[in-house]
Length: 304
Image (cartoon, rainbow, N blue to C red; front, side, top):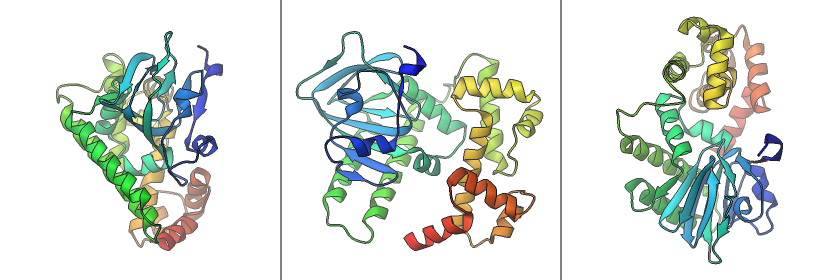
């Protein structure tokens, strides 16, 4: 199947499905059906993070080009970039019933730490998206799901959105923690063979340790003793993102955390992150978020 036939699915697509969502805001959508499986007779690629809880029935499809069967003994955890396509013998049972929690890339980037362990777990999920419910990790997800459905059914109040968001954060962190313990320690984060895998690990460790002080590919290429072109080729082929995308995403997460949880001035923050001046700092933040640092901080203060 060619790339032109692949449909991108992001958080906004769920706002257009025929039946109303159980819950919806800019970063989280919860629905009890999914047109990705039922209606789209083509390959789709997720531009959001998705957890699918199968309540009854079953479906057979390809996930990341691997045939998978999802039934009420499993849940599916699908990271950003996951592809879903019909199998040659596509099958959905008549009683197929699910709950789907879709989470925006922005919220995922805020919640998940950008480091080697995170990508080790995400890589495992790309290869093993279907998790058995009887396993401890999946079972806890079902407990979180049941509590989340209870929260959604409650009468709206001033803290409703915050409660749901923190619950989602807890669910994801618990899942990542459980998967980290589940994976054998000797299993290496593999994105290819030999040297490529090593380069990816070193790059993510370097970006994580830098705390967003440097934002150029050439800086990390020099640190790791590779050419920027070669480093970009390795990372892009392994992760599906360019090194600059990863560097900038990490920087925005770090800056947002400073804006949310410290009283540092914009000038102090600009100096902390090694920007030439506050104007460059504000332009960088607005380019990647659509708003100024000051406006973002005001929005967070209003929310809290």
